[in-house]
Amino acid sequence: MQRREIENYRRLGLNISFYRKARGLSQSQLAEAVNISRTHMSRVETADCAVSLDVVFDICRVLEIAPKELFDFRN
Image (tube, rainbow, N blue to C red; front, side):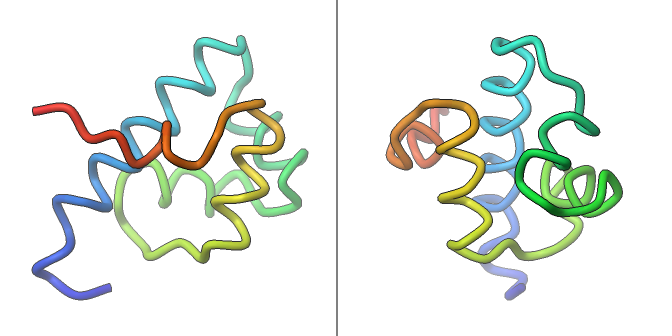
């Protein structure tokens, strides 16, 4: 992940966390549904790693939201 994009990854992670909690899912439950480890899910939510679009699309499918919802970064 490029350093100049870290803020966007942070905001993406916050949005994933927001929608996950709104659906009443734990990190473990979402990670299992997306077929990644809970540790990886945690790292995505805390912007500790980059995330592929495949995983983003899987997260959206499980959370029943459009990808644009995860990329709607509020100030």
